Length: 400
Image 1: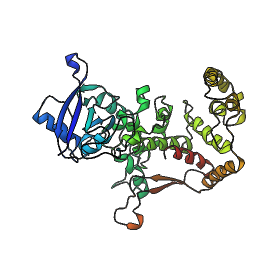
Image 2: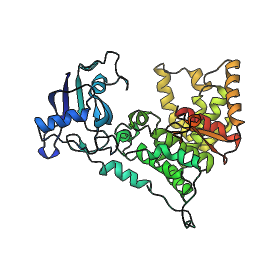
Image 3: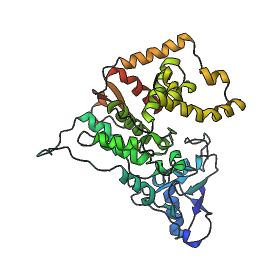
Image 4: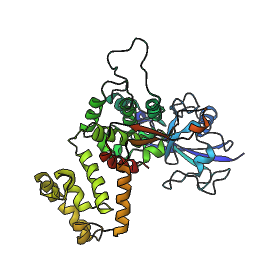
């Protein structure tokens, strides 16, 4: 039976002492879970080890921790897989990950999740951050009126559309590794915004517009996400919180025409237009178009002038350090005409679609029908005219 060295991050704020690593060697099968090893240490060696757990079936979300730097559920992470993870090298196990572990030779560092205060050892205060932000997005259905006598009749595709966000078990793994929350602790966060889409995407809810406007106008809301993909990698249930955030943005900007004070939708719209016109992002045009209007004349708008003046120091530093040339800073990159024409054809194809099509990659919605079994479902929206679908396609590519 293989041996694993568990290094558990211990911390008791009441003691006044700094956190330290507590090392224990355990003999367990490679397919035993990290939680099995922690509970074995707690039962047989040191009963003071603090760990929160309940169902041990990857349902309750209680046992979220970081294992060799990566967040996850201790109860459904095999010792072999945890040991094969290496700090800073992504999520896939190393090729040599064998029975006794991989690149770390059976060493597994277990520490509490990030972005939340530590209560003791591996237990974090989820009330202070996670649940507070969940409450922020009004996490319950607001009935449309009049309420039917028996039940609401909801189209099948609408329920499939929100199934992915409904799968969240509130473990906080996405919150733990959210880079935006590290920089801005007030950011609503991936878990809460995924929960928000669960109700924005539900046709029974009466306040879609109000929810979207609230989250768009909040400077720590929809547009505070930086698309780092950490929440998608972290989620043990494939909820893909960042994808739900992108869908909220499309609903807010494209469907509901919400012009937010954070300039988020105008910024995304400028991205779409510049890539269509230049084939590559033209940074020199992005800033003025985001603030002054989505055209070449945007740079002459007073609001754009203020932003351009504030960015001069950044441009000069980039030129001085060789990170950009004056020519590219002023005129952007250029593509060959055949390549640019190919990109424009892609836009044309998307814009000619009669309906916007989004893919829910979580579940098809049909378990017993082989013809409808693929794990992708097209969810169409008749409200969006074809001329606005290029924006949808560009936003979708950010989540691919």
